[in-house]
Length: 127
Image (cartoon, rainbow, N blue to C red; front, side, top):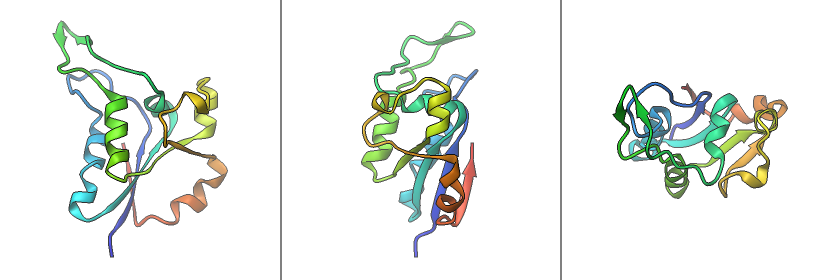
């Protein structure tokens, strides 16, 4: 039976020259290893769910991040790999993000539902 993993992303990437979020990137490989992955965006990472973002042209300490931080492309890629993506409704609301601003397919859950939601997973990764 495939191991069910919940990957919780709670902050956005900052201060590095990577072109993707390492937690999101690592989560994308779980199905290859035979695991069933689900991603939960919480706290500041709910910003990843906003449609229409593109991060080309970013420079850190004078160095360009290549090819650029394409978070919407990354989120859509994990969804296409049948990895469900959820976001905490309260964290979206606290940041003024409406559900109709989210990338299609992202589901919301409330923090009240979290205890029951997490029970279905064998392992939880926190990033």
